[in-house]
Image (cartoon, rainbow, N blue to C red; front, side, top):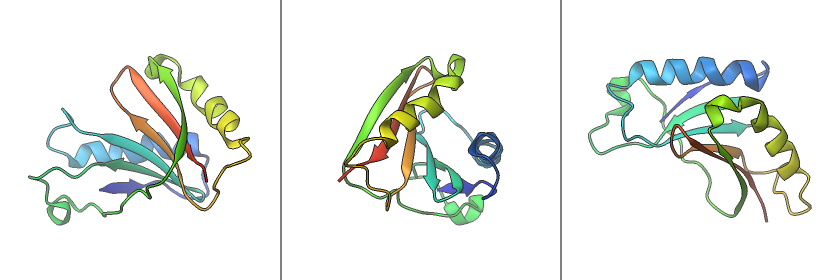
Length: 121
């Protein structure tokens, strides 16, 4: 399930607004898997669907993150190091095997660990 950001605005502005809107719709955040995904110029705040979820009742759109190979970097204590996210993506995007047809992903493994990922061929 996801809440889209406002395409055309900087990602740094879209992300917190999209996550605030997503989190406000969920009865609990505990134990959930959260992702931030860049689709073109749009940021999507995403959460994995759990068995008890009813996306229609929550008024949330559904979408599947494309699979395949992704290169990644780990950012520890990401909440204290938000300034490291953009440079990590920039470094990964310089890869010669980058696949620009698929979205980039932030996987929030926990409040202490973030994986930033870009698609590769």
